[in-house]
Image (cartoon, rainbow, N blue to C red; front, side, top):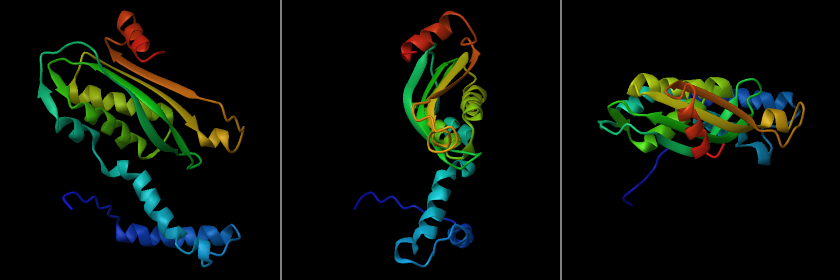
Length: 195
């Protein structure tokens, strides 16, 4: 086989999480040793490390790794970037799409790097408002473009399956810098992402 993707997990963190998840199951009235739950604490321990891997990643380093000199100075948009994150208040998922644009100022980056930056900040315990600004700030600080725009639309399970239980709710957040601050550039971006 020419390609093999291996997931690795920190052994100490995994062991500690397994113990804690077994305790959680007991406190909820379950038997962590029964057949259906026997491997659940390990699975959840590994899942949580995957879902929070963004803490070990550096968005600026990702952008710098594919930063190229280019005279292009029109809007670059990567839209409909799927994102999955965890609400820091209830540790339940929220998911949706990010639309990201920038206007180069001498430098561009690989298009996949924009999606990777979204993942770096989404794969943490988060709030959507902060996530939106973290994406913008990383691109602004690293590429120093003429402007950055970020719009995120997401559904939050903490609002859908508990609490107010509003299954059709959608939360939209936005952040703009530079030429996207107001006027025609922002309007063009919003039109191009279909908003």
